[in-house]
Image 1 (cartoon, helix red, strand yellow):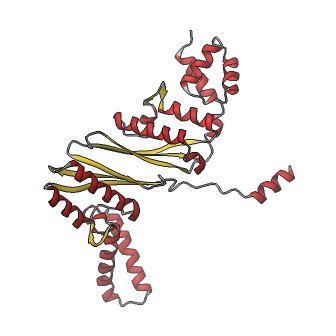
Image 2 (cartoon, rainbow, N blue to C red):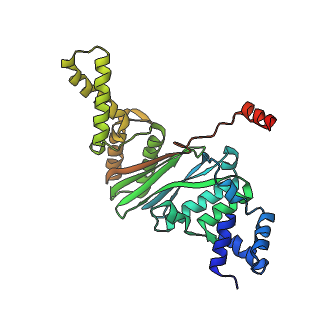
Image 3 (cartoon, rainbow, N blue to C red):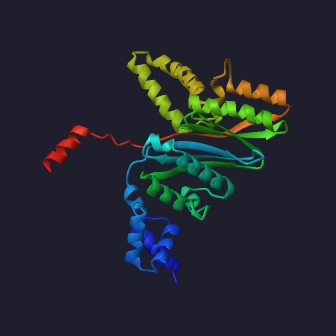
Length: 303
């Protein structure tokens, strides 16, 4: 009989998926060494070796519930843009996003253990790593799930940038709100705001920016007595660029995002407010490996 402990041990030793390990042990009547050979022959034990390689490419995907109350944004990474465009990879990311939407999860580790197909999300990733031959990682996700909210999002054409926005909505046509929400999400994706509005600005951020602006003004030789007034003006201008609701609307530069939302709320006969937003850009913050061909050739020659 193949026990769970046996499957777990084989998985730890090979890095292959749970279902693959169980199949290998079944096929070899519980013989560990034979099971390892079985996995190696299938190319499944290589996944663990690939897991250390940098995955900074990939795609962002967004999913919504039928009523628009829930939404989830997911980033999954691969090593190359070629694989990120692969239909199998895209389909896997879509399935992972659906799993995130359907399950009560708040962390990546929890999502990795969610059921997907015959195994888990983690098993699916491991299987794809072995099959396609590149490291892949479920990097992050964010979820909107509130009874009084409407989720709307936008993913740029190449799926490298995505934004999910949460709206507080009372009454009105949900479809109109969704269309407006997509425009606002497009704004977030393209203009990369840091805060919803001035009331949500981090005090530490304000203090840090103020110190920088003061020093800049002093370095310019401005008199100390007018620096404070100058800094207030410059900070105000900066906040208009970093606060979503203060930004000029990308589809109509004559109004702000706040004015656009107000217009739609009036037309739809409802109350609308932006509660939060999330913006993902594939690979941001990941240090990509830069291959030095000359150094690699020199190393091989020396050997």
